[in-house]
Image (cartoon, rainbow over all chains, first blue to last red; front, side, top):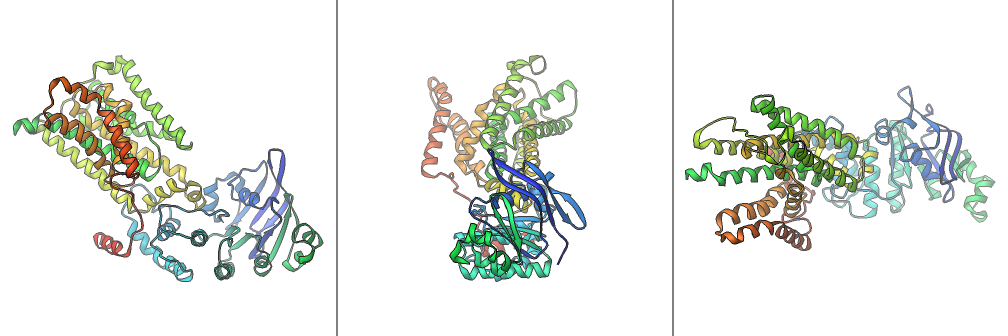
Length: 254
Length: 311
């Protein structure tokens, strides 16, 4: 569909002698929505943390392709990577306790030109330019009170996802995006994701334990166990694969 | 009346205002951004002494000396911030406090430059309006203090303030949204510290002679106690806190209440004890300070009010 977006080469990460991630060669982002599955402790979240540079890898190289440039993001910092268009949502709920939902979204939308210590009169301009975009999301997802704080775990999770989408990422890493969300909200998130991949050419990598979601939403699935990517392919093939069945789903589930 | 305008009272009010400005800057550093700056007295002393030394040694006019002192303080703060701001809160606390103490000790020990405990000066007021000189200078300080508070107030309603709040709340999350948090903290710390240096510099004529005791850690503690007492997250927290501590103890008690002279010394010594007592009581019964916590949930009514004010 598109050019490859992310190329991982010889990535190794050890935690105290234990090899948690060991990837020889992996290309991500060739499809719209891709899934990453695997048993607990397979290294999925660690891999996401390595890509977004929340963790430093021991060896290896990650190449990111944006606007025709090849960028080695293993040398970029956590926030630089986000500015390059590779954004991640969080597995564990994260929030700004003193910001309301709307503030949180405004924070996400505010670019560097609004965020200067002398730019103390730019609030109105920001609100005006952001209004439409924010309203679009607030209409799509229901929040109890957009000018109040996100209260429930579900609201915080949704807010986390919307905050990331506001950055208009080219590559979105989602670590268990729908855990804690009710089914109808999950469906809405996935429908929105699918639209984003088609309309904006965004690539998404989802890490999930909810396999129905993976089989239903993803165009390509990677199976990871013991730090290595063992199988990859369309969901139907991966689903029937013997190794996947044996190591992850259990015999009866196939 | 004349005595009131030119005497001790107006001197104390000037000092009070300077402290309000400092506490408000501390509110911006700690209350908004979460930088645990315990070096504020050292930075203020640095601005103070560099202004006085530049003025007397280099024989420069006052305004130029103030500008140079402000810039110098900014440069020094950039250095401190570069080293410290990436560390965790405890390290920032210890590091900035250490810096403050180093500055004070150096001023005492390097007496060839600073005259040590003898005090450095004199620095006269930059203008002379007879008996109104002190009053005029007081009004200048008032103007700058209001400017700082206005800035802090605007900061609460600006994208930059929102960014700083997000850094205080959850720095990794702010970074994951592409915010260069360390750079922003460094810029803001440098800017606000330069402001502290500026207020140090303009305080010199008020004091006439500057002494190391004006910049000791007890000043830092006073400012911190005042801010926590007032409310660390509110713009007026510093003002309320300083009035309730320095204002109440140093001005009202010392000038208005007639205290028999044999107890006067006792009052000075028990000041910090009383500050501490008040702080404990406030933290017990009103943990976020006298003014309370600032809830950023701006409701629709406030937004329209705010829009009207802007337009």
